[in-house]
Length: 188
Image (cartoon, rainbow, N blue to C red; front, side, top):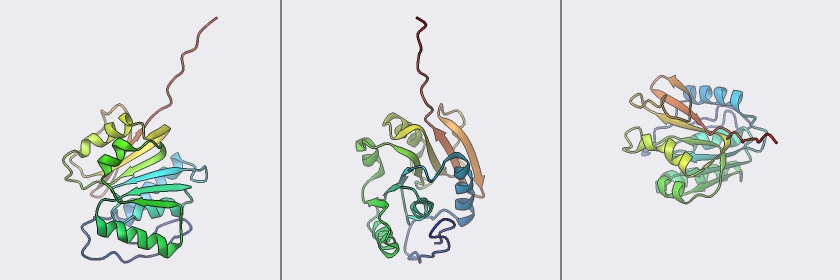
């Protein structure tokens, strides 16, 4: 696993071969962050939530780019321990890993984030419900962006919060946004 940009660019971490996680490819990560750099000013006190963190690869990319806070959620004990070890090796305290179930976290979280990234197992039965759960539980700040990594079998173009879709080989990213609500004005 390699960090592709930012202050930790080029740092490599050996992921144990026994891991079940499917890390996002370097090619897909680079393209994802190229898109995000056109949508978000990473130097503007960005708070990020990384769901199904796996190896922590995406969390590392966010902290490498200077995000103020990254909360990463990983249920697997070994993956969580690996993320903690990598963060300790870096000496970086801007990332807070939590060992918990993503769906429990979503239902109990009261914090809002500028960016939420989710990379669930592609075969997750309720994968398609994630955009609605994020919106319904008010986890995004106004104009916040939710990115869902998924396989080719899912289409989200008709979702009311759909923003755009990008495909890099077998990796698909769909972007959703909670737009600013228009304020009614009265003519007096």
